[in-house]
Image (cartoon, rainbow, N blue to C red):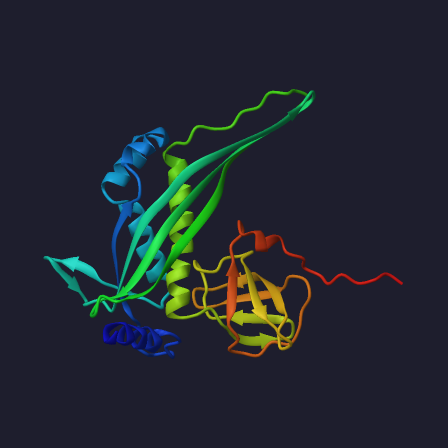
Length: 272
């Protein structure tokens, strides 16, 4: 119990570190597979090889995303030692990586497509006590191809290849990095100018078109879309209804494949 409490205190001290404060040092540990690597042979030889080597490209991409945020320092293994000594250790397990093919057709049309869905079970623990501070399963869906044929009833999907895995791996690394970062230093509104808000993360964590949800002064959730971003900050305009927001308010990122991304943007009113 004491170790768990100590871990909670450590995480609490890391959340919302003021500018100039020492950033937490994170070690990205091994990423395992929940299923036998032979299950990935259909993707091409490279993915099965990545699986057997504990997904080194996914791990490297996750490290790059964390480091690029400016909120994390990375620990590397040098001659058998972790330098600098980490505060937090991130590990993961790929729990799902599959394809979904869809096709709709009629006498004079055909629409086909292929999507990849990847899931990663994340764990973040205190490097000193070993206590798990938080964890969860993140999932990312990526459209790999589409085939639209007019005037015919035949169209195709696609067979995954190395490039397909690269797209899925990059998208999964980004959503995993966001999950870790927003627990260490939550996404917040840092400033307001007219209807536009500023956020405390920039590229590559927040990119153009990203949707964030912010709770307004009345408690109603408001949606904003990122219209500009630098390495240090992002700026978002209302995506529908706007309302008063206080600086420092927490924000929630909505992934583009989340059903919440299709939520109503304007309030329904009765016509006169």
